[in-house]
Image 1 (cartoon, rainbow, N blue to C red):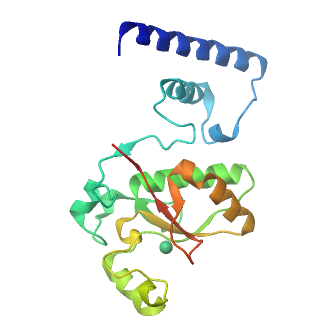
Image 2 (cartoon, rainbow, N blue to C red):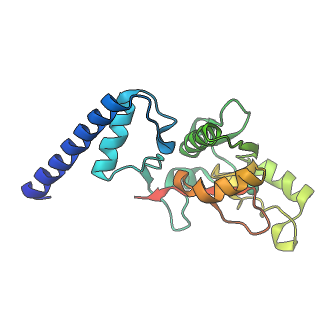
Image 3 (cartoon, rainbow, N blue to C red):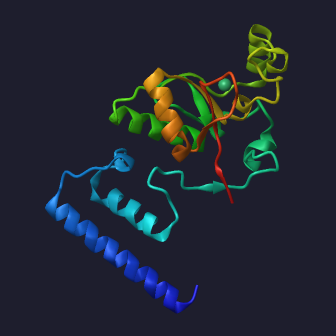
Length: 202
Ligand SMILES: [Zn+2]
């Protein structure tokens, strides 16, 4: 980036800071949907700065990851489907459910933002070990044969990259409008509850 571009970015950021200071002075309680999970002027400022720099969306799908040709983070691919160690997973809220840590973090933020907007998102399934995938396939049948389970060792749940949500009509509509901002996409026909986490590639 040339010096002129840098100067123009700095001017852009300075004007955002002035705008924010003015906004805070005149409307201290102002809050917008994308920032409801943050608190205090520090994080609001950080969000504004990141937006100005174009490095982070306000919904927070910020980081990008090294992905293999199938879109699986290389960190996870190294462990193997259904064999993700506990230290690569994180809890979803205070439930017993776990996902790959960045997916859990984004899901937690999404659930909190939805709640702030009066939308309840429940969770019924998350990471599945290989053994659990075998069990689900036995109980629900293989998807390829009209059932609802992936072939063991291939499920997105086995990467800690998918969650099954408990959604009423309002929440289903909210997810279809907002899920992608948090990295979650509805990608399986016949399973409107199944949401896969799709991080940005480096
Ligand atoms: Zn699922």
